[in-house]
Figure 1 (cartoon, rainbow over the protein chains, first blue to last red):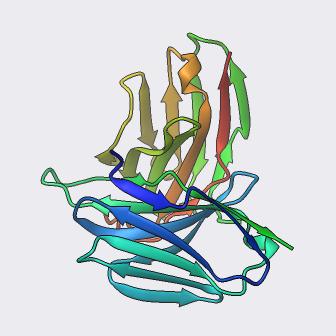
Figure 2 (tube, one colour):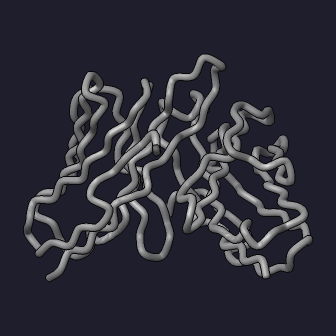
Length: 112
Length: 116
């Protein structure tokens, strides 16, 4: 079982729709990241969360530490939002240092 | 443009060979991270360096090694290459390297490695 689960795996929506992508994790974490990967392969960091909610333009990210769950919302979606959205967490580790652990990604297509 | 550069963009080589991937972090960033993205495994953290020293290790194979030089650029060395090493290799950097979790990481464009 993956420690970071995303849903849905694939999502196709019409322009203007409200989009929600979910991320659940099974271990304690110190931070959660949302990344966007464009069709060309480039990766952009969208948000880093340790609690609460963050907003940037049409993107909103929330996290519920108790429920081990985060959501990424896109309002007024546009075809240029079409990309793979990846959730990544930094887990607590008794040994100390850990890098990020990634979900499999959600492939989003926004149709005009 | 993230400010992180990676060379080469593409690399085609044969099994058993050795290659070196290079990463230059954003100006002022002390931490460099290496990630591998393959079709079957997705994105995986390989290793992190902070100011020249290894800070964290992930799923990096013994055939792979990395280092960070005094000018803060980093190299990932892949040896005895196998077909399964074909993947996209990303480098990312961050300002101080709080164990990867507390800082925004800026990703380079990646190096696409194909092992034939």
